[in-house]
Amino acid sequence: MSPYVKFGHFTANQAILEAVAQERRIHIVDYDIMEGIQWASLMQALASRKGGPPTPHLRITALSRGGSGAHRRMSIGTVQETGRRLVAFAASIGQPFSFHQCRLDSDETFRPSAVKVVRGEALVMNCMLHLPHFTNRAPESVASFLNGSGCLNPRLVTVVEEEVGATEETGSGGGRGFMGRFMDTLHHYSALYDSLEAGFPMQGRARALVERVFLGPRIVGSVGRIYRTRGRGEDGESGTSWWEWLGANGFRREGVSFANHCQAKLLLGLFNDGYRVEELGCNRLVLGWKSRRLLSASIWTPPPALSDSD
Image (cartoon, one colour):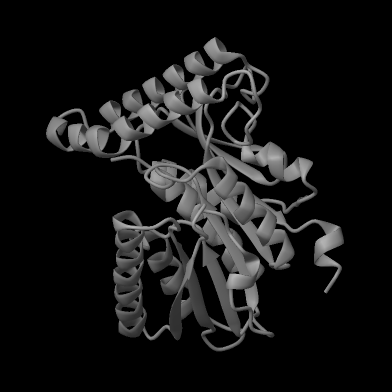
């Protein structure tokens, strides 16, 4: 159908595998785990790797929503069900595994102290912000997670985000006014619709379901945020990407490996010829449709002042 979801997951997973290649214990804190589909391929890769140390123990801590009432209970229940499925899958392939849950505060902010960090574990922070992820999280919540990531001194921080307003000619969409941001959003989702239609033109019912369940609410939310934040800066939602935000806040770029780039090209080879991949800024792989950049995956390590403190 589309490489949109797999591109981000596979790029992040490959970076994680390379960063923890010799580790015996791995701990991943996942900002938005949803159904956990990102982690099945990672588990398979860990369980089947040859040479080196035995299969490492993998621990995943998934964040659930803050707030109160039905939404919070639904989030907790969804995360718990995801955990049960991942535990069962790990057992079926012989992958040592444990699953934990961590709740965001009532205002959706992340507290690093809420995560149990065990000495000897290689810690990875994973932040997926592209569709179908990130439908209800405010930019302040994302910023708290990324800031908190630096405090926990992880081995790696992986971020996947939409490239709204970015083309080959314009690059980043930063520094645009209300109308510019609105048009950037229009062109971004138009390209996404176009890529979906090209991917399965004869399956209109399935495509309509994706558009209604995922794209429609995301477009409404994006346009609403543009209107609410007009005239003021808001990290990650006013044309400033999280890639730019992380760099400005001292996070260090971790280079994308040749193997990771090749994997991305092989993935796109399974889909329509309109997709392309490009490497930007040494630590970022970008998925594009024709001349429009759709999403990017970037790899980071924490700021020196924080990582050196331990």
